Picture 1 (spheres, each protein chain N blue to C red):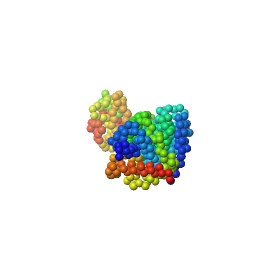
Picture 2 (tube, helix red, strand yellow; picture 1 turned 45 degrees about the vertical axis):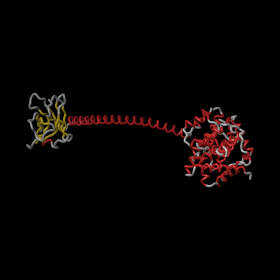
Picture 3 (cartoon, rainbow over the protein chains, first blue to last red; picture 1 turned 30 degrees about the vertical axis):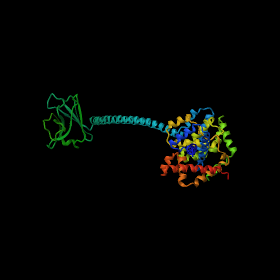
Amino acid sequence: MNTHDQFRELLEAYALGSLDSADRALLETHLASDCAECAKGLEEARWLVSQLAYLAPNAEPSAILRGRLLQTVRAEAAGGSPQQQAVHTTAVPWWLWAGVAALLLFSVYSAWNEQRLRRTVANLQQHAETQRAERKRLEGELSAAIAQAHEAMIWSDPKSKKIMLPPKDPKMPQLEAMWHPEMGLVVRGWKVPNPGGNRVLQLWLIPKAGGKPMPSMTFWPDANGKFSAMVENPPDALSDTQALAVTEEPMGGSPQPTSAPMWVGGVS
Amino acid sequence: MFLAVFSPKGDDEVSLDATLMQQLLRRDVSAFEELYERHSRIVYSLVLRILRQGSTAEEVVQDVFLQLWRNSARYDTSRPFVPWLLTLARNRALDHLRLKSERQRRREEQTEEFPQIASAVPEYEKALDEKRRAERVRTLIGSLPSAQRKAIELAYFDGLSHSEIAAALNEPLGTVKSWIRNGLMRLKESLQATS
């Protein structure tokens, strides 16, 4: 077998693309020498190899592919350039780009919506806090108003009995009290010095039967020396109490007087 | 039946493909549509056999037919159309199979020459219509010993070289070369026979 015959035997494998690099280089060098017989043989070999496609099992492309192709071709035929239409032919299918775009839009919307909701929640929390503070303030004002109204009713009701509490020290102001059989007892004063330190003023109910003084509420005058204190649950029977007294006691009050009365007023 | 999808195509059919390709030069969409109807199934079958993945195969088929549409001027109408189209489709599919980078593939799209296929077709090419040729191909290759048939399929559908096929089949390199050449020579003889 001469050299030319050796090259002839490589043509089918060359057309098939299965020649290893060394054989391929040798054959291509020979083909470049304008060997007409090998050139013709190669053309026939390429035709022969192409017939192997019929070994592929039958399959049919989808209608979507046909529609996409025709859409692109029609658009290009109508005047669009291939470059403009390349968007239809990229490796990534159009529906995937559409999906990515939709996902991106959804992500942007979600982030914006989250921020919006966060702002809304923060505003609502701030509003609720303001409402709670306002409610607490109103409740305080309401309680004070009710207490003032309650005290006013005690002071104005004809069934109430007024009790004067003169001071033991003539320099001190006089206190006064009003006792109502159902609504309670109110004690008030003006220009009363603050006891100072950790001490408070404490009211005592002195029973007629000579028993021990009954401890009652503690209170402080304000900066102007004014106070108004109400005992909501005094003894039922006014007639059982001989007198009211006020002493100065440690913070929190005492179960029995620890100092001499500063004010004393007879009840009946 | 597989062969039923291939309608007979004689000389007139071949010239019809060439005529349709000429009409593409005038941006005739109906000519493109007819070419697609005539050949999309065999092209898709081939590409799917190579890539084994439907969506990727459709991308490649789309590329192939857009090449026809956009570069129809490069086609030599004196050449047999179907072998040329099948060679183009196979090359594209093998490019994808070898995982060519998208950049490289696009660069090649700009400059790629259409496949070289016989301008002087074999004398026996016209002896059989396409349906009968397809039948002959399947019968002949199917009659080969299993290993020899496998070697030819690995070369054609998987794009493997002689050395790679020898390694894959664990056979001597010389044996693989002989199997492939002898198998193709027997195929050539089968197609040359008129009866």
